Image 1 (cartoon, each protein chain N blue to C red):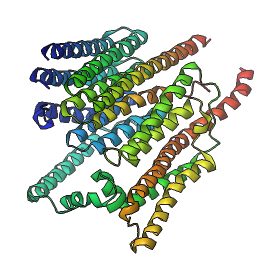
Image 2: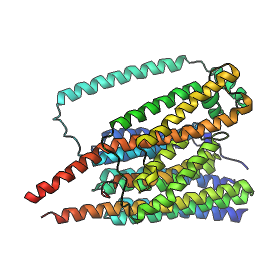
Image 3: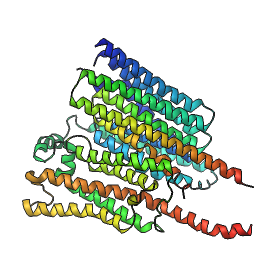
Image 4: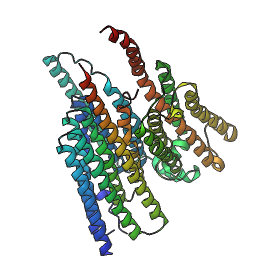
Length: 107
Length: 326
Length: 87
């Protein structure tokens, strides 16, 4: 039991670390593209690690079909976050690129 | 398994309430509209957190779905318009208005404090009465039982308000709402993967509402946002405008009225539900209401943006004539 | 759940909450509109993380539903904001 707890806490800590790293990147990186990188990669990885920690904890403490349902929900949350954040980042960067191109074209 | 009760986490309560107050002030005080909009969206998320904290998960889901969905979409859509010119600030007038506002706020606060201090410690009878009667309502979730059975007249009137708003918005939208012609690969991915997931989520919230937090309003809010995203990503069927959409919106209201008539014919009371078919009736009405609310919200969003589309099309049509001369 | 895991979850909730609020700074400071809107991207992933941690602390499955809603609707801001450049 203790080994599982240690594993869960380690995964949780790693997940929170990545979310904090992504947030710090959002606040401190010099331009839009690097900020988007930080948010969409690090934060979603952190979310995945936290979800894994919670899924592991649930499966060990209360095994059963209800736990499998919750794990499926957590996996769905992470997949939606992956696709959604990637799409978000692309649309934002594309909008900024288009705005820059338009200002370049002014005679 | 011991669970830390929510009531133990008191420091988090204080922090969340403080954050709610701070983001609310930021939403008004930030001069740039984008920053104010983001503050307002964070405020919505924190409010959902507070609702969950006071054991009102249904309201929390609705707040998250509406604040982060249709309301957020409407606010962001307004961002591209040029900010209206600020009138020159008159210093004395600003001070006078602030003083009056502060005085009114103090009066309101004093009145609220007086009322709250006079409230008796015991809650009224209605709560326990409703909880007792849930098993006779057809569903097992007390919120849905109250909304769709005990007080369904209120829900009927709320739906009527939403329908009237949608009809009004449809009348105000200028030209035909255009379909998006070339969404691009990223939007296509959104349309193919995220939109079906959102529709499934709406269906889940709808069905779960009979026994867990959820229900027609929450599902309708998610469906409305899903329709907006789908339309903006090129899904033709998601164009919430025109006669067909109005039919869907009004159908929910009419079905509810029909249910009232059936209740009258069978039990002698308007909108009463007989226990033997109450569950089926509630689930069917909730399904129609979900579609009705979702389409109505999407119609409101598209109608709000249609004036700008028409204006942009007008200026685009006029530009070649001017550009040719330049 | 053991006391250690409970404490770890509560600490994680505090830190995630602070991260969401920190995103507001970018909304105020960011030079361009897209910069300010990136705070909303953070709100999606970070908010979902906060709500799933709270769901585990309080054993309320409804909070996971809120997490799915928050993360699923996260694309709406970008899709709406960039809608006019498509036409």
